[in-house]
Length: 86
Image 1 (tube, one colour):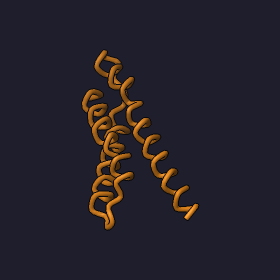
Image 2 (spheres, helix red, strand yellow):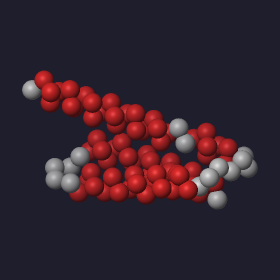
Image 3 (cartoon, helix red, strand yellow):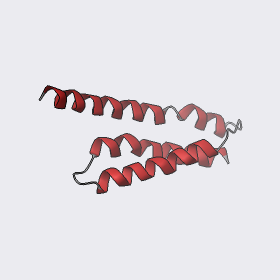
Image 4 (cartoon, helix red, strand yellow):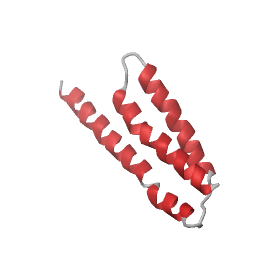
C-alpha cells in the first residue's frame, strides 16, 4: 500500500517536471521568432518521441494518463519550436 502511494506521487511529480521541461522551449521559440534561429532537429525529434508516448499512454490497457499528459506539451512545444527554427 505504501509503495503504491509513493509510485502515485512519483508519477505525478514526473508529469509536472516533464511539462515544465517542454514549456522551457518558450525562450527558444522567442529567439527563433526574433531571428536567432536554433537547430530544428532536437525539437522535431522530441515532438516525434512525445507523440509516440502519448499514443502509447492512450492505447495502453489500462490507460496511462500521467504518461500521456506529461508528453502532450512536448508534441505542441516541440513542433512549434521546430517550425519557428526553420
